Image (cartoon, rainbow, N blue to C red):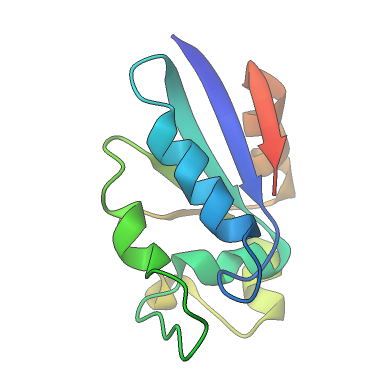
Amino acid sequence: METITIISRRAPYGSINAAEAVRHALGAGDDFKAILVLIDSGVYLAKMGHDMGSTGFSNLEEALGLVEDLEIYVDRSSLESRGLGEKDLIDGVKVLDSDGIRDIIKKSHSTMIF
């Protein structure tokens, strides 16, 4: 099965980028194995307890739970630079260093960046 790595670099609310990353992960279906990589402000997508405020966006934390077998990886330096740790993340998220993130992207058949 081919893999598609979806990279999310922006915060989950305020623009459509993170929502589109999640939508594409949901849409991978049986054709691709979807891998979601969160870097920069994209790490907030994996944070527990989303508060959408008055953004009008759907809760992306809940949407992530709809994707079966989705692998989610967070860049350690992006996480730490935002004052977050592994204890702040939703279940099943794996934290990797830059080399680990690079290896995932390198092995992927396709990559999308949001």
